Image 1 (cartoon, rainbow, N blue to C red):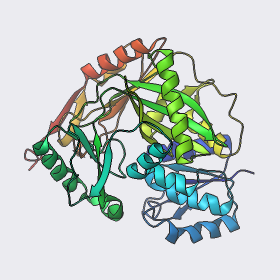
Image 2: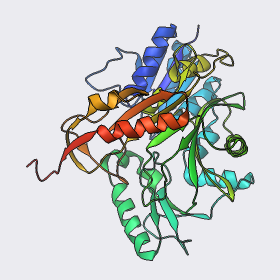
Image 3: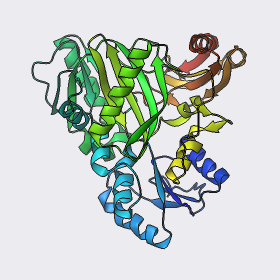
Image 4: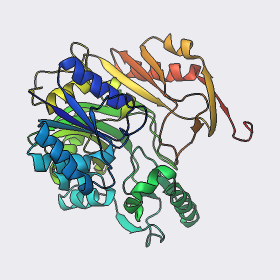
Length: 411
């Protein structure tokens, strides 16, 4: 019988969705998480305490658990979990992405090195110590941390003065409390030539080295900086077929270059007249609530597809629901203390909107980019055509009015 080991750094929404899906499918699971030792443990013993910043130190404990109750598959949620998951899977003889591939996928410099070695087009880039500055940066350029995701800490600079300010902000961000356990990952930063063009996201799964693409998402809002906060994903893409084919072929080559061979992937690319440029390929599925943008025939969720895949089932016959779908990651309009939002009912009433899901909770301190690591909420839409989905998302967003107090007002 299948028994999954689910690696997760939080016990939030995405973890609960995968756990609920496993229960619905009758597939036993155990969590490997660094949050399971909290007083409020909803998993009732179905968890193993680990620390993802020390994967080697927690490998033996997982292998002992595997001897007691053998696991047959693994799922890794979030970037911090993949290296430990891959080390365990390799030692336990379970199909998953290998450790060297997960390490490269989780490090922007190592990934760029592998893409370059495979002959994939790359912008000029250099790694440099976090307390120093890049040498002869190619303005406009982008500076970024090596290991953060979701565009956190990614800043464009058009000249030397902007670069100095960007580095100051980036170094300040890396002192945040939630990053201190992983400070070894932040000893270096990366500077890259800024790439103009349109940006796309690709969601898929690799089975025995073969990539199956679930969706190619357009990102219709321009992402030109100075920060790169994502907003709208819409699929299917409205790009000409030859552009879509080039993007997907580049992602396939990138998957091979990294050595990813079994499990979910989430890729980000830029396209311009010079070609398709891989920004990154993560060895995990799309994060959090965003997975709800994908539905498969019979109202099957992405979580269900990935649980079945990890359990060894053949998912070749599973197809995406016809029509177009999209999600808006609702940006945080300003930093401060979240009080509430008006206009939710009007947003829900927009034709094509399937769900309005708020993520912020009253009293929460909200941050804006480049510091932000979350969104105010999520809007989901489904319609016959992609342009109808995009229009519905924009109209629904126009109805939302967020109440955010400055911290000074709360004292």
